[in-house]
Length: 187
Image (cartoon, rainbow, N blue to C red; front, top):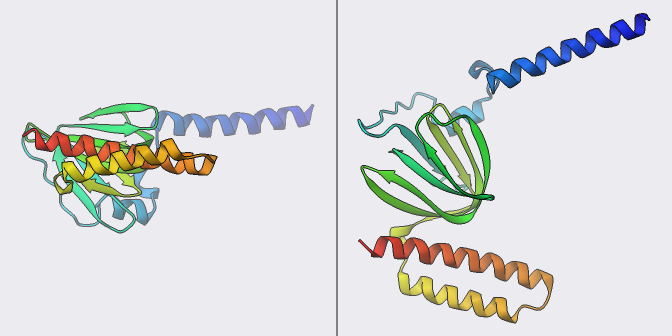
């Protein structure tokens, strides 16, 4: 009998602890580690959003390169499809696939090719950690088309699972580069 009451007391305590974290969503900011705060720019870096922009987008790669902009809307190439982010979005985390990330800055859409990664949204701040990225204005349409043709022919010739997987990855990257380059060439 005493074991049952002790077990039920422990279960009640654990459920209360998990319920508190579930309702709050995340642990309090005071207990966060230094690394995420540095990645989100909280160490003395002052951020002021433009009047019409209400979302801070930060794209970072392992090399330390990045883009930081104030924008009104972002469309991410998530692993489950495209994901739209607006101001005051609920906190979340999502895996990203190879594709085109688009953000709306001062009324104009700007594309960025991302090669997989993760995105987190919290307090009107969107942090995107990617394996690599490329700005669309640095991509030539003709080169991107040649790369897509080459990747497609490589995919048709692939015989082993490894070759097919590698070719599929190259086709995704080339298609994303071409899409972003064509988006900027229309203007």
